[in-house]
Length: 155
Image 1 (cartoon, rainbow, N blue to C red):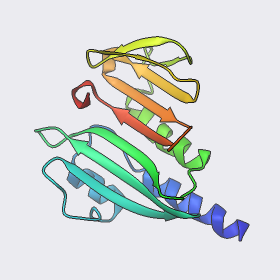
Image 2: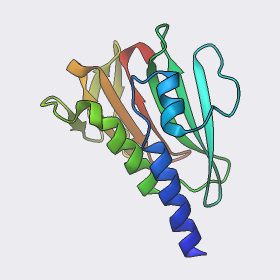
Image 3: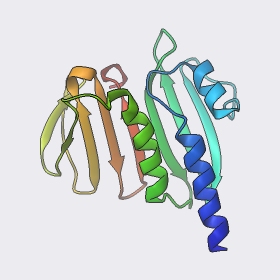
Image 4: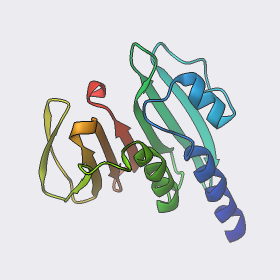
């Protein structure tokens, strides 16, 4: 059973690792090798993946030009959200800012600004911010866990 769980996490990580903020719906469809679960709404597309104990949703919001401005990965119902899945998503999202000298981790309890709004990092969050490159990544590990990459226009 443990081997099956590890295999499922590996498959999910490989699929989700295809995601990158700023991509178009067609680019994401090509990388995912699948269409969204439902016909995309005007600016939102959703994919579902089976994992250890349920489903994980990959939710993408697009701007008026058709580029993703928000990409979120979250478990549905009782699905397990393992660190490896979130870390794979984070690695892929960070490719667009990998050479940036302004990308930095915001420690818990610290304040930061993004998209014209102020926030404070919760003790159960991991936050990466690159304001000059308009990139924010938030991994929430408590409650209903999720990991999300954002552009300011998504706020």
